[in-house]
Amino acid sequence: MSEARKTPQSHFTGPVVIDPLTRIEGHLRIEVEVKDGRVSEARSVGTLYRGLETILVGRDPRDVQHFTQRTCGVCTYTHALASTRALEDAIKVEIPKNATYIRNLVLGMQYLHDHIVHFYHLHALDFVDVTSALQADPVKAAKICSSVSPRPASADDFKAVQAKLKAFVESGQLGPFTNAYFLGGHPAYYLDPEANLIATAHYLEALRLQVKAARAMAVFGAKNPHTQFLVAGGVTCYESLTPERIAGMAKGVAWFKVPAAIKVELTGAIQRPVTGKDVILHLIGEIGVSGALYKSLEFVGEGVKSLTMEDRLCICNMAIEAGAKNGIFPVDEITEAYLKGRSQRPWVKYEADPDAEYERTVTIDLTTLEPTVSYPHLPENTHLAKEGKDIKIDQIVIGSCTNGRIEDMQAAYEVLKGKHIAKGVRGIIIPATMAVYKECILRGYTEAFIDAGCIVSTPTCGPCLGGYMGILAAGERCVSTTNRNFVGRMGHVDSEVYLASPATAAASALTGYITDPREV
Image 1 (tube, one colour):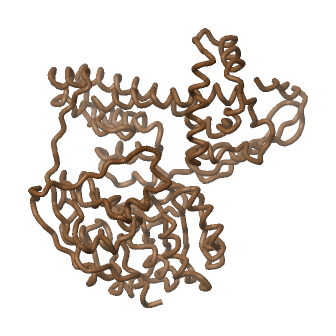
Image 2 (cartoon, one colour):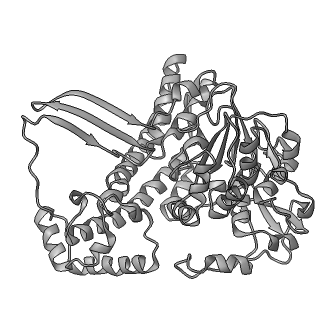
């Protein structure tokens, strides 16, 4: 194991700086002044303020738990439970004992889930070097384990872990390990190869245990980590907990409702700068946010081949905004090319049966589509971008899970390069992943964005859910490539979010008004 280091002497005088403290929800820097071993002053600087108090003002108390649980991607249920209990205390409601039991069972499941996440999955990002673990001696690692823990550990077990790691390293798909602090950082972050191997073995095992906790939680709470079973006065899952269903779950058998299907026939070919974002906004505008409720959206037709994978991913991402359970595209040459180098296991091609039945068919002529914008406060409130010339904006956000891919960054770059955004407009660009972030740097997009007056962030949800960075004040308007524009989604309840493609958002930033990208 790494050599132990002595703690600072009690008479230490000087500054202590921890930067960054965390990368989970943004940047945080802690500065401490120490005099003779005692803290004399402490300061924190960061972007972690979530503004919950402001976001919740004026909302229905019954909805509070749904907002609070989304302020964190880890401790979600505890926030929801605390909010629900506060409401029950305020209206003086006593819940049945069975509801208390169910709530506590779910709390126990998330207790296990969160400890695994915090101890292994978040902290492993900072210390574990997978490539170093490949150089470890499995026999030595087993001896170290046996010396500090009664838990059985064998050299063969660690050899098996190394074999799995070798496949990860060779594929280049190292996931969270690629952003570790130790890469080019302080030597104190480095562990010995055997320690890296032990930590990685525990990390992989923790993933399996996390799945078990999530499955148990799903029996009562339906979703993990954002549960949907709490309600003031009790829980909503009694009906689901029949003896038959519980027995089925115990045996590994579960029954689910099969969604009905809606066929979306795409004809013609998309005309750039129109993108997949414009396609899905147009569709939602046509069928409404409940138009595909608990249904499957199946996209077919000759027009599919004119859509890139980024277009298709965006469309499927936003299928839920029409109420759909999923969005499905056929597997074609474009799909197969995308999978090369990405899929690490054999994949199976599925197609609709020749006699497949559809609840309805919606036909969209891609040739006729124009840049489209969803006005507040629902994605179905769609208008053509060229109709928004009189709507002044304060901010644009380009990124998120919906439109944060390299093709989206390229679309924004082609509009912004060599230009500058309008005075008084904030431009925020957020690549979806570190891979996209690095590719933007290599292609020169990042420099062009900065020169255009925009801020380029590391990957984060950030403003999309009103978490931090780009939070809107009362009366402010934002053109965003994110997926939702509900009341207060990005800040104050009196702010407005307009959903659009990256090209439309970038064009709007240049003029200060909602703008069709074909006009700049």
